[in-house]
Length: 341
Image (cartoon, rainbow, N blue to C red; front, side, top):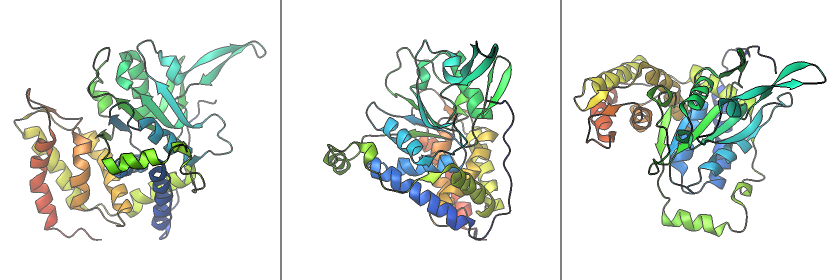
């Protein structure tokens, strides 16, 4: 693998690009819903993060379907013919004895060429499941931080680019803290969303059992897949064709300011979180059939964007209410403003 930078050719956005993006998203959503039952809200957030070029941290219980979700997402992406070193999906089981080279890859001496050759690790994939990411050492977490932040890895003083579609779904158990390494703030800040999953309802659970003996990952067999290029084209169309007017930007900045000034908050949201949130708002607008961002988009996504970034005073376990109360004035102000383009 060459350590050269990838370049993306830029074309003007056409009028029908948004329609093509909506069709791509709908095909992807249909495939995921056929496999994952009772989690439509989680599926939507994961698709939004993928379109917004972000990453997702799932806080869930064992057996909740996180691996199935990630595998189904990876299986829904058509591999490109020339990308023989880029897999659609890879799972990394994080353990205390894991080494950075187990994630990024390593240089191997080849006797026939008398040279060192780089062998890419599992991080070279479209969709990477970082299972129990808080169980590995800070050194491995640092290697993941470079991959998530820069879409590259550094091995033996050489830098290797990851694929442009590189997307991480990381998990951690909310109850099991023995033998874990809490994720540092800089790494938490690289996750666009932190999604807290709960047990599915009774009807959905009965639906899962009714699929037996058909394996869950085969439930979407026959449904059309999406290509890597279609997803990248959808990203570009969303960023350039979904209206993101100045009042939305003002509301986000004022919301961040309100969180930082709130006496219940010790550490507020970063500027990076506001930048990462912009394409997420546009992606949600597309999914809901609009070509402009509304206050509803902010109201829905803000808790998932800010909950893992702000630190509240001791004794305040759930910071959701803090975010909602700080957001209320901005949402009311936006409701009185026309955001249609």
